[in-house]
Image (tube, rainbow, N blue to C red):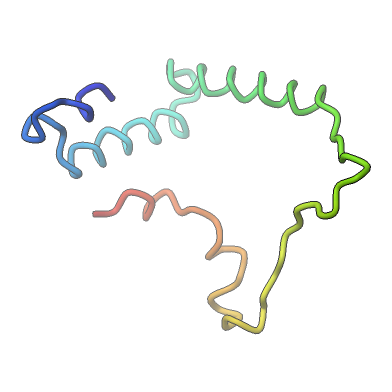
Length: 96
């Protein structure tokens, strides 16, 4: 991460190098569940899950609006809007 902030732009990693690094991390997470990064990610997810369970949803009694998910099925074809196209694809995620 610190290399990305280097004062000299020529010393910063290229997009292909970043892609390789991130692809390696993703492979370590999904393909090697006992890897250090996978164990750390699982620990973080457990903490976040516990925080979500312990936090109470509070809507202020004077609130005028609350957020909600909107769908606009008339704006796209069925092929474009199916669930598979809305999920990230590991093989396409870091294509350059």
